[in-house]
Length: 487
Image: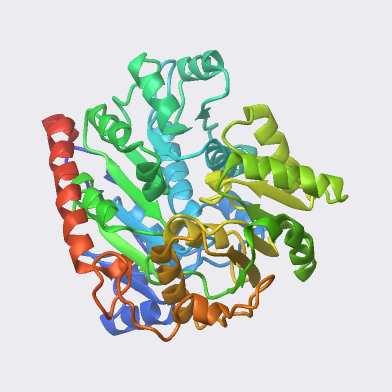
């Protein structure tokens, strides 16, 4: 039994032979899987789901999804979460982060339900907060899949509520009144429900912030701090992301208690399973060149654009050319977004055109090709976008259009990312310009922020010092907002 202070008691422990594994062997396993860990008393990695002591229905449900072996983030992350530790999980997209927090929340809720069944108006025990409606729905479906598998084998029924904008607040309120074990929510709708006292976090002991950097970038920073203040007792907090900017690292340190950090691959690095191609294309030639670009691979293909108007224009153009395409962005209704994703997911449509609403966390099976119609404004978004392909050991292609309208600082980061991943720089399209020359490969203009040589902007010590100072202020406000009851 692992005691968590005033919080719950985690009853899970790894098998005895794993618990007493020599340190040298543990290090060999972590090195083999490229797992970097930080923190005190870190649980040993566990290489199979069976050794993690998941019940047979869960193992069968995993197998039904084609999952037979844990990924590196699961090998180390699941034992850390199951033992009740706060955790910062950093891994490239498509690495299996979702199971690291969904399987434990199901097990913990099952434990609570067996001890004392949840009554009306009770719960939730666990809360998962994500930045977009699509990611919330996807996470909800993952939890529902495993919960139904358990129930089909005689385990107690577990209730999960999906709380997102664009859906009926009355239905969500009625579901809460019946008593729920788990809630998956977007920050805006969750704040609304907390403010109206439709949801209370009095018995909530498990909080997950998925794609945390995205939430902060979208302006939910204040909402996240406010959510912390609604907790009445100690909680287990998990924070996940594919990228981990300095402001998020400092934010995590203030919000988590003695966290275990599990890092699979360098934070912010692109998956090596993605072939990255960068092509110089004139602004006015982009839409026409898309058709040629779509010939590179069979479907399904994802096309990302920065502006909602560009998404609509690309979608209309592809439909006129006979391409089976759908589109999503923030101005479309919830029904339109759900329908588009379902059609793409089921293979009824070959191409999905989207803004960055589809770049974070969404799991589309077997994406062959990602096309960046625009280069994103920051390199983290680029990493998230191309991470929609090359998932779970499969290879994918990412094509990015660049031209003179791109920010020099982002191109400098792109250059370093391509060099780090040992990617080739392709010849330019539409203009007789060598991308290698355009991206500045071989020159030493230095950091785009401070002008210093020898480092990229994401590793700039001056920028890091500024961000650390700003994030430190966030952290102090967190402590004040949380109050003594938070701990």
